[in-house]
Image (tube, rainbow, N blue to C red; front, side):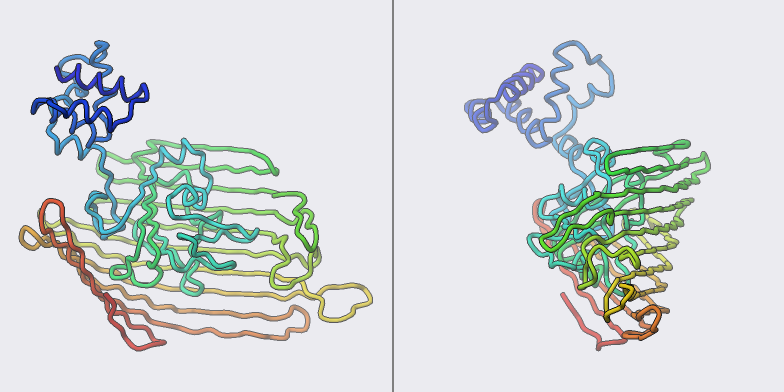
Length: 466
């Protein structure tokens, strides 16, 4: 009877009959068993419909794993389709229990949609979009994206490790992202403020990227591609999970594109000034409760837009920018019984920017242009610690602290040749944060999340925020 009913639902739904109409017909005068089967089908995202079709055609055999779906309870069926998210509360939880609206983009989604960078992923997520000024991709959320913005209102993390740099708060989303997109297992897009746990940047949302483990490779992968605009890329990766539990991933990638030959603006046409090159390297070693991760990225980009009132179509000097990022992180994560999770992390981050801008300061009879150079560099190290514990049957408490020391926050701008210096600073800074959050389970359908955070920085007095 159950197979016949579910098959009927499937056939009518696939033939175009609205689900609301099917609901009214089935639930009107239906018995308790029919109501239960129908609710299972709807609440589990119609997961039973393709299975029922296979059962009706004799494709399923009694006693097989697939046949177990027919005997699952309502809770089991609904749990099949519910994704889990880590970044919302710093622990694994169902998206239905997270204190945010969450979208999960999986590795399978990336392959099916042929995304080539993080900006492509975010452009396909509700409420997010990116703009491109021929220099950088800028992340926007619900209309907020000022021209030239660095995306500092969105926190970008790699498995919980902050990737926004310490100087500009940049959230890299194009080829300047530190991980090759083919190494991504899933992307967690968490909408809304998360500052009580993460502090700065987590205002519009959090984008947490989970990289692939060695078990998903089980050997060596080689990927080569070519495309329009003289674009080529290559990636060589090795990953494996050994019998003793050691998990290793080592990968390196390279990308190059000449870009568009001619880009027309209202003021001028730019020719052959859209070239881009990028290379990345990534290593992950996990054993027991410890995970060591390191990543490196270097990106070169020509700017055809003559930004900052520079000279259009200049070739000598050429307008370009170079970004370099490096991070290394050691994480310890241990479950203590069934009611406590302990997490600690120490890390080192490096970011460097170099840019050349062509200007014409005076009338040179040889028509030579002047070069202005921009330089920025940050070097930071930090510690993070958090503990998550179940207190009674209703409360899950998350408490912890984070501390970061910036060894160098350097900026310099000068004219090459004359050596006229306009900016030359190199500061240090300390940032400390303490946070606590309570997930209060008021009932089966109600969870109240309350959080409090104290932040202290060398540049301003400490403050408490909810």
